[in-house]
Length: 510
Image (cartoon, rainbow, N blue to C red):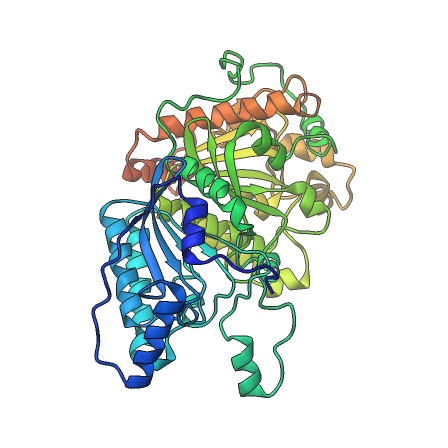
């Protein structure tokens, strides 16, 4: 549990707000006719906490940007939510939606207020509904879970964030440990309901000390609402970013280059090509895979959601399995809810081959990821960065524009596997790779790839410049796609994959 005293609501607001920028939205709580004992509890809570209710709402500025806030005061009856607190939260959320402000929540609560019974319990539905409307308007909802957050608060507005981080050591969970012990006659297992454990298990996106929170929020807001006049990346003006126009490259050469230990992976590309990168973790539903990197970032002036395969992590024991695919689907939902374009980076030795993957529904998750990408309403750019093996690569391919590195490739199986299927051994791998047309230049000729980014002569020898070159091409493609309507993009995207096949009755040269 948190060893240091958690901040009060006022202290947290002072910490994150630009100096003097907080403005309260709270109306005085009107007196209500409550039972005598509860009235005394309320009076003592007001005196002890200096607050008139268990939540404070309002607006402030973080790095100059307006942000609406909802903050619990744990000193007021354990931060519990009654009908008045719920009404205050709903009014603030609805105002943030009307004024199109990002919303930051800082809950610290034992749950709903027992003195008010079912009415307070059911009020969580109204809070969740208001947040759903805010998110459906394409507005960010960010959550900072403080120590402790349990019960109905954790099961409603504490768990609905687009991005959710928590205070170090915070107790976080549905059923509080004291209640569990009283109900079941034994203590709840140690180390489960902690911020760090939930982060490891993909429930939250990170563990952040309060002092680090303003910087994180500022970085997120820079991505979600970038300032005007933001320019592209690096000092290179882009005169060297044209299509690869060199000689033909053997598939075997590209395969060897793509598997080189020094070849830059997705993390290197993001480090050098993107700005304001905010990594996210897991599905938010208890699953996480190191084989996939999910982030919100900017390429030049363009904010986006990034779903990237990390082949290094996959080879080191984090295979591309069902959890990674469900994590990718979370990225698609974020893109849709925040109205941000989506960038997928493909670099994988292939999907997991294991009993666990099969029992976890690997094939179905690939299919669902394909289906949702084909119908995704936001602009999409896919980047073939290196290895592109099988269904693991195909899952992230559907896009409006597909970019490939010069030595990237895409195949239904590794060439060695294709050789075994066709010839019973691996000796025909090179010939199979050439015959299948798996290299970037061949993929462009087939209409599968739109842009081949040069490597000079190999990305492993110029990781920084190569990464920046990729980033500039991504930025330009995203800017070009922004001119089309969602309906136009969907029609073209579906049409591009339909055009790769010959329909019954269609002439051979069609």
